[in-house]
Amino acid sequence: MSVTITALEAENVKRIKAVEITPSTTGLTLVGGNNNQGKTSVLDALAWALGGDKFRPAAAARDGAITPPHLKVTLSNGIVVERRGKNSTLTVTDPTGRRAGQQLLNEFVEVLALDLPRFMDASDRDKADTLLKIIGVGEQLAALDQRIKALYDKRTAVGQIAQQKKAYAEEMLSYPEAPAEPVSALELIQQQQEILLRNAENQRQRDRLAEVTHAKHRYADELQRLDERIEALQAQRRELKASYDAAVVAEEAATKTVAQLQDESTAALEESIRNVEDTNRKVRANLDKARAEDDAAEMAAQYSKLTDQINEARRKRTALLDGADLPLPGLGVEDGCLTYHGKRWRDMSGSDQLRVATAIVRRLNPNCGFVLLDKLEQMDLATLAEFGRWLEAEGLQAIATRVSTGSECQIIIEDGRVKEDTAACNTVLQAPADTPAWKKGAF
Image (cartoon, rainbow, N blue to C red; front, side, top):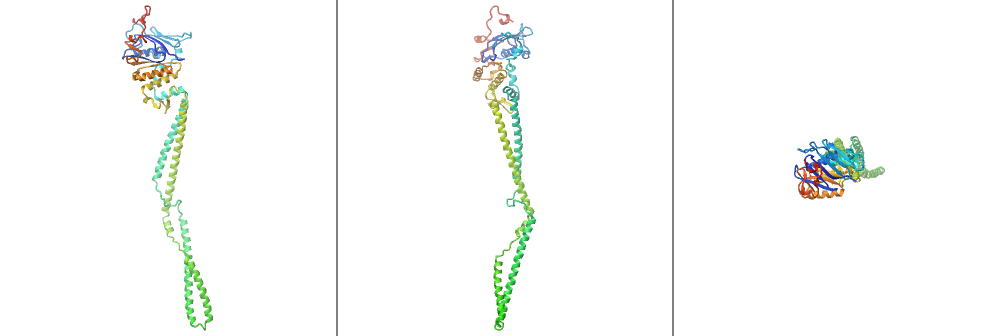
């Protein structure tokens, strides 16, 4: 069961003359008043009584007081804490008879509950470390954050290289008309020689045709002359006629052969030979561009893969926090900083900051059921009411101050005392005749 404060009696502490307060067991107890009336002194008195000498005010005694400071705090577990005398000696009375002292108080009094600004003024990383300490996933989350950062840095570098390679590839020249592979001048010369050989054979065939044609004409002339001597030269004519007929057949064959011949031009090869260096330069440029584009695509693929790895690490990180027993729904840690519903500390409203700080401090020591809050004038009345309902739902007790004398304050401090018109709720009780002088206010 969490320990709460059931009563405070204080005399001559800082601005307090004499007060006796009975705060609500849960929810919000507001101590109001104007400036310099002793509101904050009430919280300082509680912190000193429960937190030990490290919370002793620098000027603990009220100016002009005759008697030394006196404090008495009663707790819900029956323990009574007092500081009295010239040296403000601590006395802790345990109803169970246990040996009591500051060490016993430390078991159920959380230091930050007495000094909430210490948590609220801490760095974002320290706040996050406090939360991670509570939920017990600090090392795992740190490892995931480190991996995410490493992956992110690597992806950023890969992305920059990919962009550079892509830009480099886009700026490179390309020649769509160039062949896919470099051209060999030797092969081109061999092709030219083969064509020249074929053309020489064609020329030989043409020469053969000319020879056959010439022979035909010569035989015709001879036949004409022989016709005149036909009777005498019949035998010779028949021989010549046979030769003639053979020549005709040969001519027809040669004509058909020559008709099918097609000379090939070596102009393209000669042009290629002349331009082989330029062609190969273009081929190399195309190959370089293709390699650059492949490099860019590979880096883009690496970037995408790293993005997937980052998303997976973030998913594990989210699952780790989702599965943790958080002091307050919506709390988280991003980039080593405490967040609430996705907002960092500096972006939270003042009321959300108080809610977060209170929940975390409560979880630091679940045995401590109270927290002291100063300067709640930052909250409007609706937010105050909502904060009070949340405290009650959490079973938490908050004793807070506010520069106000309005009805929202259960206790009004005026000139170091509880104002009389709030006596019905919490005030200095009317002292019977045998009441000690410090309770009567004779100081």
